[in-house]
Image (tube, rainbow, N blue to C red; front, side, top):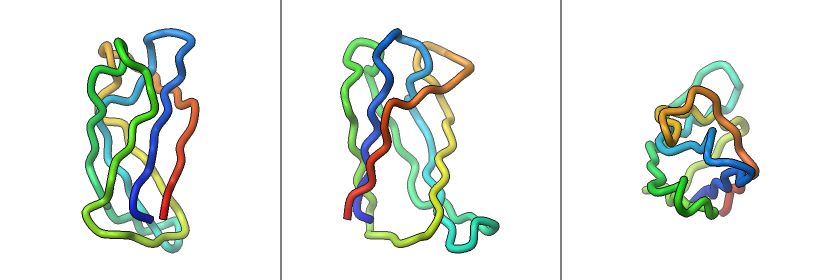
Length: 85
């Protein structure tokens, strides 16, 4: 994989993932951080955002940890996640 894209839900301005870390694993038990990311201005512009990895990665499992939710929210919602080679 070379990049991923995050599409926030657009029904309201809550639950949009502003900052986070993407982890990968081959066995689902041992996780390795791959990349930190930040998507700004989501509340005013809730469009699909893309994040490129510094180097291509391969893994069987993917985990995303949200560090900051836009508008200081406490729950996260995602419309779509896409991963690209």
